[in-house]
Image (tube, rainbow, N blue to C red; front, side, top):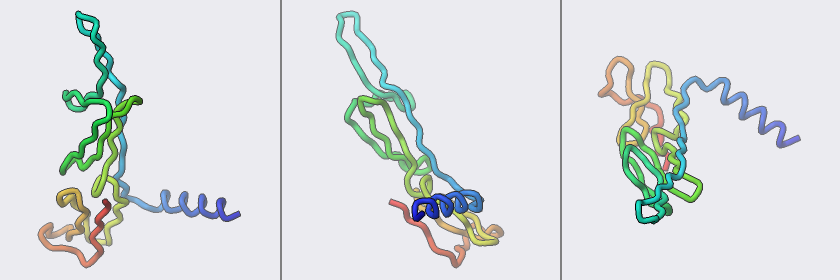
Amino acid sequence: MVIHISVVILLLISVFTPYIYSYCIQGPVVTKTSKFGTVEKYCEYDGLKIFIGSSFRLAAPKCMDCRCTKQGLQCCGFGFAAAIVVPTEGCVALNDACKVVFVKKTNASELCLSTRLDNK
């Protein structure tokens, strides 16, 4: 019964939350063999080769944590890119170095009196 109530609550939150900004991306492991028979396996991100077992973090505006494993590349948003953002009326959410800041719709240099979200 408790599990069913939790699922219903999560579904209601997802239906009635108008602004959600969160994502993960995945990519395959690339395998290449040199003309001498050496096998090279790696992940690719934006044209860069990433060694299997490596991880990296991208700054704003992307705000992503990435890691390359034997299964492939996985990058997920953090901070602004992972937060559930529901601005109060008359406000908008901005990405401030991967942190969420709420500012007035009419004046982006004026902070709203709502809470600043700091995920991760």
